[in-house]
Amino acid sequence: MTRVDWHTYFMNIARQAATRSTCDRKHVGAVIVRDRTILSTGYNGSIRGMPHCDDVGHLMENDHCVATVHAEANAIIQAAKNGVRIDEAEIYTTASPCWNCFKLIANAGLRTVYFGEFYRDRRSIEIASQLGIELVDLSQAGSLDSQ
Ligand SMILES: [Zn+2]
Ligand SMILES: [Zn+2]
Image 1 (cartoon, helix red, strand yellow):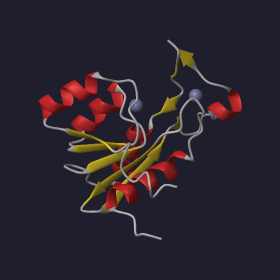
Image 2 (tube, rainbow, N blue to C red):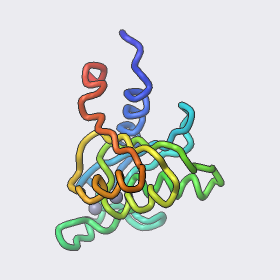
Image 3 (cartoon, rainbow, N blue to C red):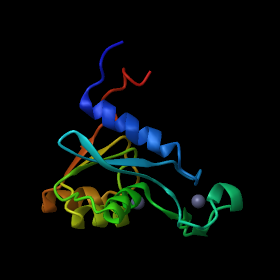
């Protein structure tokens, strides 16, 4: 067995977080990292205390499930809840952020977004370069290690 590189390591942990997702429309996981240390994790799921999509069905609006808080948002919330500083950190997410999560990422001061697969939102890609936020596609990285 070869030792996995850092990107693979953190993306594997994001994928692991995604397995806790409670909305089967899409399982997403996210990990916030600084200096190769995990600061926070998140996955998409219902509001705390509310029933899971997997149990009661989705709350659909314009063809999207709006019942859940997204993985990236939950990772940022978990940091806030625990008083963990995430300014200038990086985020690994299994799917590239939607527009709403991208806005949270930008204002939380995260500088780099590594994503495992591209997910529908092109706008964040355009705006990211204007803001100096790096969006890095890792869909090709670590594919040999994930076998
Ligand atoms: Zn759902
Ligand atoms: Zn999102």
